[in-house]
Length: 336
Image 1 (cartoon, rainbow, N blue to C red):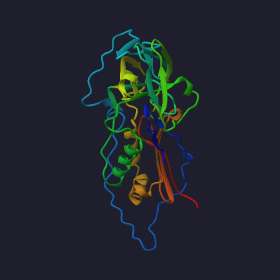
Image 2 (image 1 turned 90 degrees about the horizontal axis):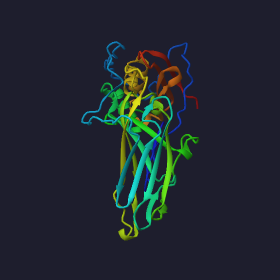
Image 3 (image 1 turned 180 degrees about the vertical axis):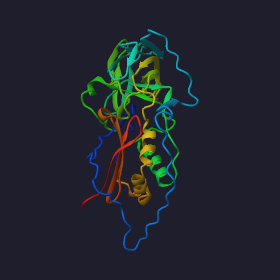
Image 4 (image 1 turned 60 degrees about the vertical axis):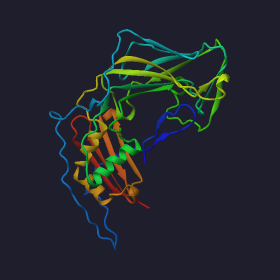
């Protein structure tokens, strides 16, 4: 199963995406293999009518405003923002005033101790002093609310992080420079102590790769970058953590993503409208039966892969990222 790993530690808790095992992209020449009932079990399947997936000419955009979110105001040309609290000065600077989708963008953070006492803080094993995130005021369109086993499947994909939750904003993931070439990485679940003398400062660089990760290109629009310094104290605080210092910088993001391109939730809806895939879920309706679920955009082919592996069989569907059409299916029994 594809997993989202949250390594909870004292300090930063980055979200990491695990590697996806890709199915062989083979369209079977014969009829798909379906799970069958056991010798003493009768298979009873309820088949609700699949929700129709609108064509590209009438489908809603793949992203939409997040209800209750305030508009993001960007001051053109501004590349720097500063916040200071109790002798902790935190600064964020973007290399370019406008971030461009598909192109790497860099951010510099500067943490300074302007107080008269030593500054102490704790991080997890990755020792990321200042975390940088970016959020937009829109979400990936969640698509339809499914019912029955398809509904269970779609809700489970939210739980595992295979598709975004309806209240998740489109995000920009920034990675510290020393981890850029590493790829996926994990942080040890431990507390590492750090300190900064009065008058000293620390400078770090962070990179956004220009994408929305495995969800593909992000939409154009404003975003808010935030640098956060957490879990800190001074000797006078008797070891009690002080409120996080956060500095925010609104920026514009340019992107050539077609607004009609499928969101992850819409791609799942298209897969659930495929009779064979839907029948597979109806025959394997319980989460306990699923060994792995998967939703990923193959960017080079502009193709979504939606799949599930059950006890002794699996089912995968390839969905065109623009039209929503099924371009291939793979249903099979698992040997062993």
